[in-house]
Amino acid sequence: MTHRANRILQVAGLARVEGEGSLHVRTKGDQVESVELAIYEPPRFFEAFLRGRDFREPPDITARVCGICPVAYQLSACRAIEDACGADVGHRLRALRRLLYCGEWISSHTLHIYLLHAPDFLGFPDGIAMAAAHRETVERGLALKKAGNLIMETIGGRAIHPVNVRVGGFYRVPEFPELRALADTLRHALDDALETVRWVSGFDFPDLDVPHDLLALRDTDGYPLDRGEPVVSTGLRFPSSEFGEHVAEHQVPHSTALHARLDGRMFLTGPLARYTLNSDRLSPLAVSVAADAGLETSCRNPFRSIVVRAVEVVYAVEEALRIIETYERPDRPFVEVSPRAAVGHGITEAPRGLLYHRYEIDAGGRILSADIVPPTAQNQPAIEHDVARLVGRHAALDDHALVSLCERAIRNYDPCISCSAHFLDLTREHR
Image 1 (cartoon, rainbow, N blue to C red):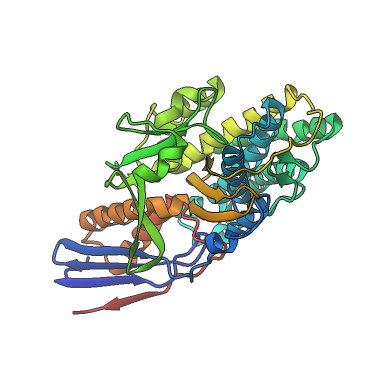
Image 2: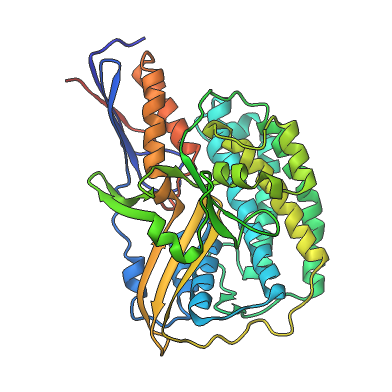
């Protein structure tokens, strides 16, 4: 047990998160003076790169923002450009886009559940060490992830940075035999997904309920993935075109990522928000397994987000099978989209939360301005707030245990800083 008047905990490189970030906690007595989740990657200037480009280029350019969730960037970009141009791709192409998104959810959620998050609950430093003790379990996770990748390869052309997505639809749509082969894999994947829920529901979850406002899409037909209207746990709902009037970004000295507020308040987007605002939109099977896993119709404990993600994987596998079984091959792989001088807005649900794109284009289709608001930037203030609460509650822990708890808390949110990983490096400073 540590009793110290002033403590400074520093995690120079957060492990098992996508990207480069660090954590700085300062305490004085029993009080937490500050918590700073610092994202120190240099600015990547994607919005500046897009200015002056052709209106058909954002899906391919913005996919490079992330190797874990490129489909989210592609589809948010497509929706924003098509909104600006007044284009409607029709229900058959929308179904294929939703199928592609299911693949990304299955792949991304499974990666986080098995290799990034589960080691925290089972006491392993990483997924490799966990695999040595639980080989069959990790192999189940890899098989499930492979099923998600196969969807992206079949619909998107490849699993990483798909190349088949374009404004107006796709460059090519699949033949029936390709989807039948995919369905065989997904039927096995559904068994793995159900077993995943049972597995993670048996973990030991620290007690923590977050008070933040929750923001997610809500769709009139099904659980939100590729479409919907933003809704807030306060009851507020607004069209995508008013996103910028409610969500305001600002700079902070300790991070190269912008922070965001929702009508001036801290908020949370991602699995907890989606589930709490849309649990009634899940399939009957997903509702049943969620109840068996101990989830109520809302969930505000971020440590239990691993269970919510597992339930969402069940839904995504089921939804993919449903789309394949009802597949109507489009007559053409895309609809023609003609540019016009306008502003367009596009929002979809990335695995980590709501992803907003806004583009202004001129009559010739040249992009005049672009704005991209990723989920991690929206969640950063809430993450810092939740870490501060944990540190205050567990101030008696020694530095090693407290830092470990802080890292676990951050990984609950699956922050997507970018695609790299680091080992933990702790320095302690006495004042």
